Length: 72
Image 1 (cartoon, rainbow, N blue to C red):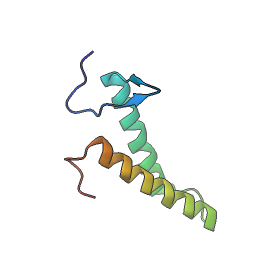
Image 2: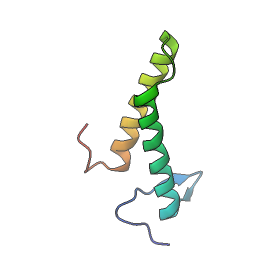
Image 3: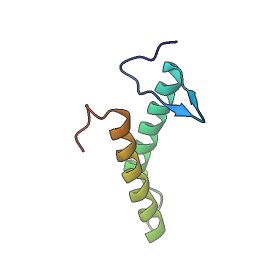
Image 4: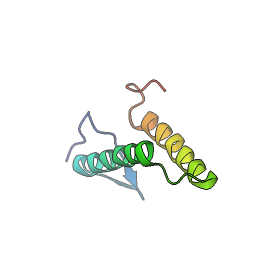
């Protein structure tokens, strides 16, 4: 299947995901981001630090997935 121009090309262990698989990964990432923003991972120092770390990683993944569409 040819990769859609609207979905990122994602490779796992050398295997390029199909458009549907890439869409699933993108949607799962965004659902996780939404959950982190709404609920976090706890109110203690560790939970807040983990939430911030995951959100930072999600931002960098978004930039790699859609470098022309996201400005920070």
